[in-house]
Image 1 (cartoon, rainbow, N blue to C red):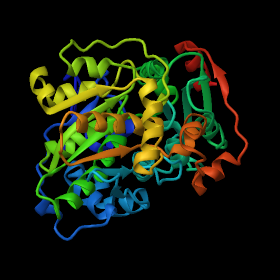
Image 2 (cartoon, rainbow, N blue to C red):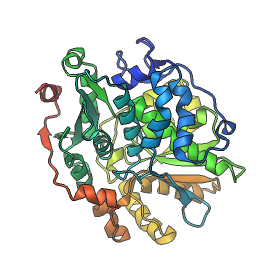
Image 3 (cartoon, rainbow, N blue to C red):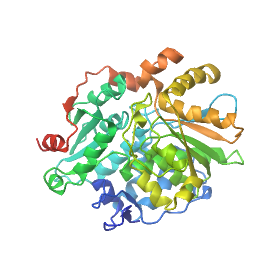
Image 4 (cartoon, rainbow, N blue to C red):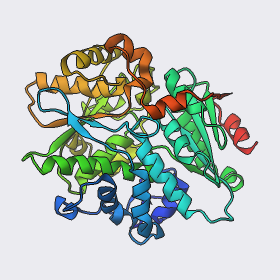
Length: 429
């Protein structure tokens, strides 16, 4: 399997090279030269998430040395569950993706990427800097995955004042080979700085770089695994395929679900749940795709005005009309997020984070409109990460043990101007 750039101006590379480089030389995102085709039959007898992940990812790693290491990689990366649970009494489900070490779905992809890069590193290789922009959860997941791994440094950029206090604490509590930088700007500024650094050939010659954002295939591909597992579990006992309502900002997690369906596994409708950043909702309603400055919301990890993975969506569905047939999107304002957190706790007996609340709100809209389809709301983060928002609406939420351990550590982050010169100087310093 070879990988090409969405912009078509870079040579094809192996999966190992795509993981290492992060961004293609022409500024595009790496995608498979051709998608494999799989069906439920290919997973007969497989129930455990690591085994499903290995079978799913095997074609994507064909011909690469990492192919033969997929079993241990998946065993290490997927060693916590992604349970599909009842979500109230209307037959809906909740896909819980927050049982990893930093209590967010991004633990799966970050751990998989770390395992892959550790196996491709030669002992004499220089230290590789993993540069990551985060709107809240990515940075902590990447920090945990690479913490104290020999040969790696992690530099996290996050928008100062625009992540929850507990998210900020997580980002700054690792130390050692992990450095957190609080940027005077938005997540879009952080993402812009990362892309500039990855495109700077002179910098990369002096300071080897890679990315762990959702632009990285090492994040995107493994995120397909839990959607495949949920789809297969549902299909064993239900005649209709399971639909998904996915909270999304930068589109990586949602794209993973769309890819699972595109390769042939039994998934139904994929509905995107956005916050007040309406770039995607407006596009799917018929407007031109028009990135804009992001606005701060309660669902801060989705505060994205220029979703990077839209470029991959446009690669998968080059015709906008076909894309709008394949995917739908709805936007949820802060007031509805608050109301949904309170109502979900009261009516369904489940406390959700603000991002998951966006998906739950969209589910309620679909039900009110008469849609009786089989849907799973995707729960992307544990509500305890957002206690200042959630607890006044739904009562006390106890942090899971792994999160409590991180919150007990001291934390620190250094300020950074939202300028490329400032970042470049810091990386070379």
